[in-house]
Each structure stands twice: as C-alpha cells, then as structure tokens.
Length: 344
Image: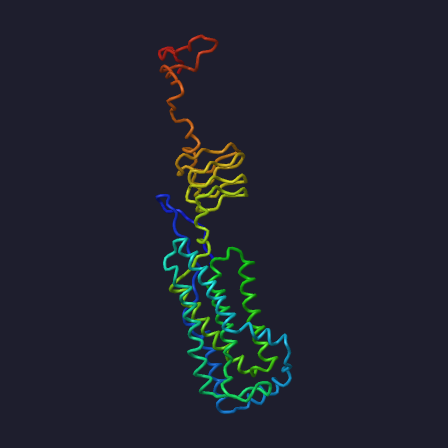
C-alpha cells in the first residue's frame, strides 16, 4: 500500500502516513458481479441443454487424453492436499499477527477458513440440482457440475496467498506467491480436463464461483482488517540503522544515522553523519549535534550550539571587562578606551 512520506505537525510530532485513495465500492461490486453473472449463464446452459454444451463436448474430445501425469495434476485439488496448505498458512499468519500485537490478528485466517467452508455448501447443491453426467472417460453418473476439485484448489491456494501477502516484505516474494497459487490452480484444471474427469464448462464454472468468493474475501480484508505492509517490521525501529545512504523516515528517534550522505528528517536523537549537511528540522531534535560538514540546514543554529552548553567539568571563563577591546596579548592586559577621548 502506497504511503506518503512522514510529515511533522507544529509541535514536532510525526503525523500518520496518508494512505492512497481507495477505489469506490461500486466498482468492486461490479467486478464481483461479472463472474457471478457468468456462472448463472453457464448454469442455465447446463440445465437447459443449451448450445454451449455442444461446443463444450467438442472441446473435451479434443483435449481429453487420460494419462498418469494428468491424474497427478488433478490430485493437487484433493481436500487432503489443498486444505492442509491453507491451514498451515492460517496458523502462520495468526501466530505472527499475535506476536506483532496487531489488532484483530485472528480475523484474516478465520475469514479464509470460513470462505473455504462455503465451497461445499455451494458446490454440492449445484451438483444435485444440475445432475450433469460426466465425460466418456468416467463411469456413468451425475453430479459433475461444477468441479469441486477446481473450487477447492482455487479457494484454498488463493485465500492462503491473500492472507500471506501482507507478511511478504519484497515485491518479488509477493509475485512468486501469486504466481505459485495461479500455477497450482491451472495445473489442477488442466489435469481434470485432460484426464476426462470433468467437462471444460465444469472447470470454467468453478473459476467464476471462486473469483466471486475470493473477491469478497479480499474486499472484506480491506475493510474489516486492513494491513499496512510498511508496519510489518515494526520491531526494527528500535534497532540501529543499517549502513546505507540514509536513515529511514519515522525511525522514532531511537536509531543512529547510517554512514551515508544524510539522515532523513525525524531521526530524533541520531547523530548527523560526518561530512554532510544537517537534515532539516535538526534544531527541534533534542541533543542533536551538527555533523562536521560544509553547511547546516536552516533552523539548525541551536543544534550547532548544543556543544557550547556550560559543562561542570570545564573551568569557567572569566568575563571580559566592559569596554575591553580584546583578550590580553603576550600577558599584557587589554587597553581600555576612554569615552571622553573618543573621536566623533
């Protein structure tokens, strides 16, 4: 989630980062309605024995070729395989959320598990209602629409990635997680159609159903349990700054500036790096000593004079007498100027 840089109020306290504007709820609702409408259209074609079934049969004849590899791919959608993956991820997210002290840390994993329980509650009645027979590769029976294996794999792997994404700190890790889940769902779908366990429309209908379920889960997580990825490594704020170009903004004044060009504003009691300009706002930082460098930013004069405070360990300097020109030279006292003899 994109955030703006930390800003300071008049009293010097940092303000909360501003979040990017969210898209309106109506647009999200429309995006969720499209797969639901497509699911209703396919279901109507299956019940009414519409023209899509003839196209579906021809496509299945072209793709169907039972083999061991397609059977292994379809097994990735078994309940014994997909559900434990979601359970393990849910436990991991719950433990880390509790350890980080996040409010409602239990909500994302519980929501993902609830969405998974909705799959049989929706798929089983649809199977009994449509009573669609299977392909020639399976024994004569009914109840193949929609595909339960595809729905289980899509919801289990998809929801696991959705609740895990806020805890992945790099963009590469997030892309790999999403790509892995998508690859697993595609592998299950291909294996089911290739081996002849399901018609292509059975798999397509499960895709539509799971898109609506996962979209609802994502909308719920954004509104009821929002996550800020920048706040995940919150405990790192108390550690020393890593060697690098700059101190991270908003380090709460406990970390020391890294060896680099400059420390960012708001680094509190951190000492300025040697050979660089003092950051803006250094005068408001208690105990900040200006670094030895070319110049100090504006409003840092008080910080530059922080080392001139009277120290009990130093001997006190004697005050100069009034009218003295300067310090005594070569042990001689300074000459005083008589105001009556001063030239106009």
